Length: 481
Image (cartoon, rainbow, N blue to C red; front, side):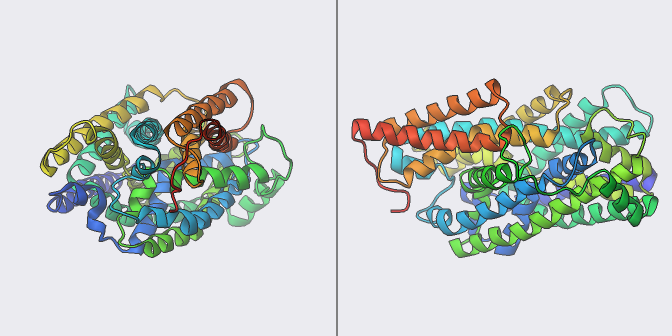
């Protein structure tokens, strides 16, 4: 890489910290720190949703899926489910979030099932999000490590990159709160889409559009649909439509990381508009990233890229073949995606759902200080996860989505149970425990693909919870009441 690339990268990272300082001036209350005073416009929330959902995992891992041997466009079938779920959330879930003054989505569960159910759901979210975002931090570190290697460094560059990026993420989120995270994500969306387009143009100039498309067709890279009903296949139509819908209902409907964005608006209609518009952008961008994977395949064909994992192919090209200036832009774009931090969401969940019920009657300043300490602690744990998982060979996208599918299913299931007339604390807890056992049994004792994990976890939770409520006669108000 050239000096201009390093200047661009350094300038971006400094700008991120500067944005945190700018928005940090207004972070005087927990409401402002966690919900931005409900004052963010819908279009900014829509961009934030896309940036949050995309992250470094999409930027790096999705091109790697299409580029890998046997890879193609079948991943896009999952995205069809993403779009269906957004419609369901917008018309069914969204009104729930704006009844009362919620800080986290799990507070809905306390009014229906009691504090133990809320605490279990919140704890599962904290664990899942910490692990998933540790993986995302690792992927970003691969890019920074590639930069250092291009400069002649070799020893410990991945570990050092994880720590360095993690510290910047912590400082930015600690100071600026959710408002800084949302607005920097609006900027990030433009940066990484521009960076991806620049990378695609450079790749196409190397390979030629016609040659890349012809080679992709010859190796069946543009295969999109697989209608076989095989539960062991990750990417087929049924896993995509059904599994993708359930997964997104959980991640975008019952996961604080995304729901917190909706709560930064002032009304459900604005939040629904933001979510529906994001569906169009997400579908187009996933298709675009898969096409970049085809271009990478054409560029490295027939010898393949000199890397050990498909997630490292795109970083290798960026740091070794992109022109001066553009290379720095694309690396900055990847760092931009990594700054979509979950640390504020984790802190909000721990404070609102776990800490405040135990430590009551303190002033808001106390809870704000605790939130900031938790932001730092959660960031350190995510750094540790990234360092520990750097030798994982499986696609990071599959790893992250598998983790989300394992834990979000039972949470979605208890929300389903709350939408019925039956189910109290005992039914909800029993259902969630059964859901956790069922989905982990399927994940670790069978070859069923991860898109079905959320289906198994949520439906087991719903059916067992409903059955228990019938046996013990528990009833509760519906979430929609």
